[in-house]
Length: 331
Ligand code: NDP
Ligand code: MG
Ligand code: MG
Image 1 (tube, protein in one colour):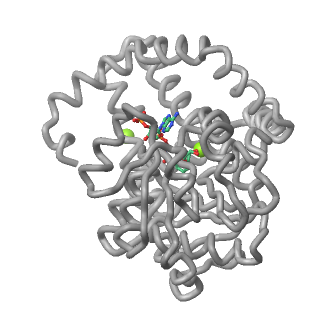
Image 2 (cartoon, protein in one colour):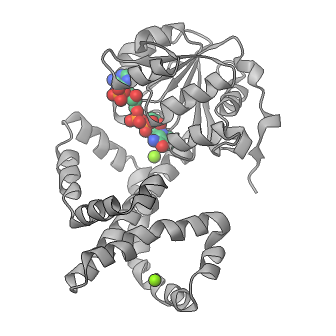
């Protein structure tokens, strides 16, 4: 069993008196900045002029600088920009200020692993990747808990890179829940695989296909929405709480029997072969190249797909239904 590290394994003193720059103040950025500040660290935020997020950061009592100025002032620079803009911002505004002894950190290994960012050899390069969205990283911290995180060292110039990464993980509340060591390669490849095959790509395709099949067969879209989308959360909550077994304990015997006998026909050998193909595209950098080129060419496919997906009937049905349920708004 891989070792989990907790609060007692990490030393926050390693960051005491240091300036930590959080570059970007979105989902992850706001959570890291506020948690570190509440952990007693000296935090500044780096953003571009006119950034919407800058207003929020200032309202929360944080000092905001241009990215370049923040990178210059900081000892520890955490890059929490969208992955596709990191290369450009790094090159023009961060790299010139990476003097010896600084730490450059990421919450996802994409740009380092796929060589979009190539840091100088005299700094530490680490990753602290919470395994949850930013609002949860913040909310759990405020409740005295944390979101589990992965950490990794890409480059250790100081001899302290690993301890510094663990200290940062403690500062954002990660060691309260437990942190696990990984490598940039492992985190990058498994993260991309998880979001493409299971969490985002696989799940949305499953929901949409189920919905379409019922609607095509003449059932009411509202009923199809409840069966194929709304109930996902109820099932997933049970699985997260107590594994597949707890969910299966809670559903009817009819549902459980249908699960065992029909599930493997939906995710079958052909699906598994496709999963291996997708993993191979990730491992060989084919997906990374596609994503980088898509962004460089102004996101033509990305924009078209966003538009097409937003127009899917399941979204219109869901919008109307959710508006009718006041209990859902509060949840
Ligand atoms: P968001 O899109 O939520 O936030 C990006 C932030 O960067 C915003 O504050 C945005 O400002 C700012 N920004 C955008 N462009 C620039 C620029 N050119 N210069 C300066 N600031 C800029 O990003 P995420 O938090 O989702 O992702 C950050 C990193 O964390 C990524 O590496 C991602 O893979 C990783 N990660 C994300 C998770 C998540 O749950 N979202 C989970 C784990 C890791 P504005 O809004 O004002 O434009
Ligand atoms: Mg990801
Ligand atoms: Mg049912």
